[in-house]
Amino acid sequence: MPRLILFDIDGTLIRDNGAARDAYGKALAEVYEFSGPLAPYDFSGLTDEQITHMVLGDAGFAAAEIDERLDALWTQYLRGLAENVTEERIKVLAGVEELLERLTGMPDLTLGLVTGNIERGARIKLAPTSLSRYFSFGAFGSDSRDRVQLPPIAIERASKFSGRSYSGRDVVIIGDSIFDIRCGVPHGATTIGVTTGRTSRETLAREKPDHLFDSLEPTEELVGAITGAP
Image (cartoon, rainbow, N blue to C red; front, top):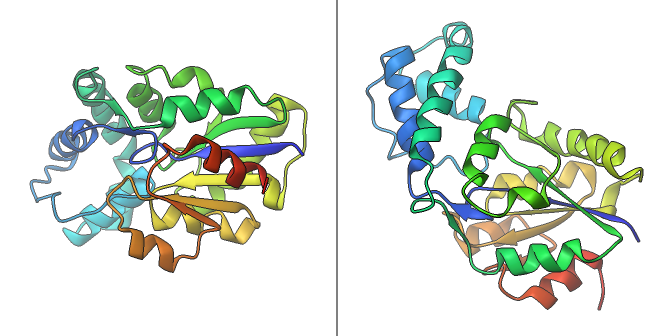
C-alpha cells in the first residue's frame, strides 16, 4: 500500500547545537530590539511564527507589531543561520541515514518533511548533511502558523510529486515533540514518536502515539511500524 512518510527535522533528523537559536536571538535583537532570555523557552514542535508571537508576546509586543516586522526578522535570521550552520554544529542523529536509505529503496513509500521551520531555514539546516536528497517536498512553518494545517499541505504536494493519493493511515508522521503527534491526530495519520529531542518519553507517551521509539536506530522495527507489517 502506498504510504507517505513525513519527518520532522529538529530533534528527529538532526541536532543543530544552538545554531538556529543563536541566529534567531540575534535577529530578534536586530529587528525588535528584544534582549530577553530565550533559554527558558522550549521551541519543540512549534512553527517559527508561533515561537515569535510567544516570545515577543510575553515581552509585551502587540500581535500587529510582531506581524509587521516578520519579513525583516526572517531576512536577518536566515542570514545568521547560514553563517552558523556548519558541519561541526549540525549533527545527523543516530540511525537516521540508515532508515532513510532503507525507506527510499521501497517503491510504495514517499518521503517528505513536516516542520515548523520556515522552508528556507529548513533547507539551510539540512544543507551540511546528506539528508536533503531524500526530501523533494514538504510542508513548513512558512506555509501556515498552525502546525495542524501542515499535514494536508504536505499531502497535496506529495500527490503532485508522486501521482498518488494519500489519506488517513496512509500518512505517517515521525517526530520528537507533542506537536508532531498532535498535528497528525485530526487527519487520522499514523503517528510515531521518537525521544531524541527535548521531550521526555513520559510526555510523549501521554499523547498516545501509535508507536514510540527511543531513537531511529532500530531500522527494521521502524519499517514495520511505518508499513504496518507485523
